[in-house]
Image (cartoon, rainbow, N blue to C red; front, top):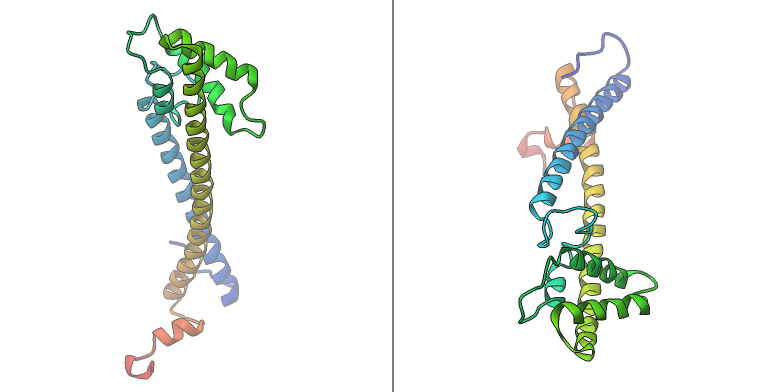
Length: 199
């Protein structure tokens, strides 16, 4: 896509072609990132917590990760009394602290036990056992999601670096084809030999 240089050494031409490839790669990466960001925002609206529309008073950012744990926490045989959206959001904020360095604080745990007991009608001892079980499961789910996010970020970084290297090499190869010059690398020279002479 870049015009041939009117003057300059082959090294300068190859450097300019490589920079052209990097610029094309950067623009493509930026557009792909914008598309992924838009898709993620649309998916976040579609995957809103079961309590209702997402908002500061009704949900938290990590509630979808522990949504099933919240269902187990408030599971009850009696019909729910009133809107449970805020109770779920409060419980989610408390459960998300289980994966922190300090873990769930005693006062937060006691508040969560009272909240579960009031919402489900369970005895305090049974509510305490349920909170312990759900908190353990929620911590495992949060840690698993955290590890997955790290792996995805690492894979995305490696893919971006490989994409930049391939864009540079492809642009240089295209520039050599445009200028009618022969490849200068050992591998490319071997590839352009007749098949009978490669072995």
